[in-house]
Image (cartoon, rainbow, N blue to C red; front, side):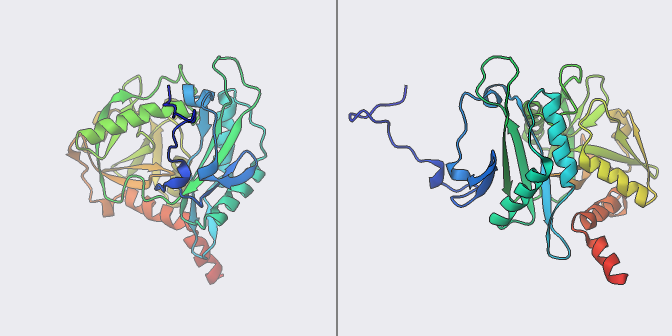
Length: 319
């Protein structure tokens, strides 16, 4: 029971408009259900099904300042299509036009004066304490300046004691809010033991993915990555495959055991937030190749050029 003052009024607590965080301040704008509003003044329903049950979907998207100085959201349509597909997989109504959402995202970036930014759309549910289907959903699009999600140095990774969720128990292909409790627990466990990040297996004991990124491993000039089925097949993962084709790098989607990674030539995580980041070791066993000599290093450089459209600018100048 909140404390009641003698006047019968509730005590005055600081509201979000009084503090500044690494994500927003008093002037930060967000897109909320069709309108641009101040983040510090936005409200949500504390009886919402997403808050109580983790029943919601989201996307992680990046925008970049390109080589020409413009603001460009990387693969925006693919991300918003996945947001829509995730909502449908969870039986959440999705009524928004994707072009409108993309336009709104650019507007939020412009108002907040952001170019190199992280973008988080969330589709969330109304108040509903039952498990009956909802007749509507809500949406918010937030942006913030973000440092490299996993840092910039090579990562010391450990095999997690947690497994990825059983795909027969979840819509594993959906980017759902509730799924990420698993990611948080795995990542916190790794960091508590002195590692930088975790690597999770699936229910069958095969290597799956990191808490928020897919994995590639290099052995004898070939890149291997866990096949779809027990993982979230990321948009960055697909981009890495595109880059492999462009650079004539052989890759294979397959089932991997931890033993296949231990002592391999190199390995890296990839994801929208993580981008492409190399691994120093797995379970304290170092990878054999110097990172600068690895296939992952080549992919990392190509990815950085791609997202800022550096290669495109060079092509335009030479033609």
